[in-house]
Image (tube, rainbow, N blue to C red; front, side):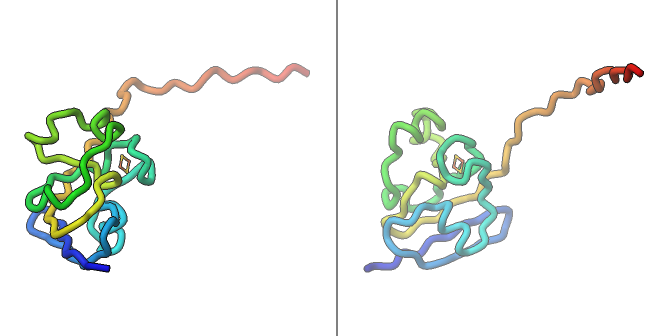
Length: 119
Ligand code: FES
């Protein structure tokens, strides 16, 4: 089976590895230690694993409807893909994007009043 070079880059750092055909970018990031994040463990629900394809987009699997639902149809313009869904079939270079966590609720949390014990 053929091996493909895959490189992840982020803020001047880079991680490179040779992989078998058909591995997902998320699996590959775990092999080489690239900091691709996940909360859903690769089931396309958290969108934390977004990467931007810099080279070799033609060497990735086409986005399925589930991935298109998550990232929108502008992936052709943004170059973004979900690492957990994109399978590698050739040489690829991707940028690991920063994680965008949901905004925290800033209202102070007030604990519920304690119930008095009746004797
Ligand atoms: S790992 Fe959660 S959407 Fe990809």
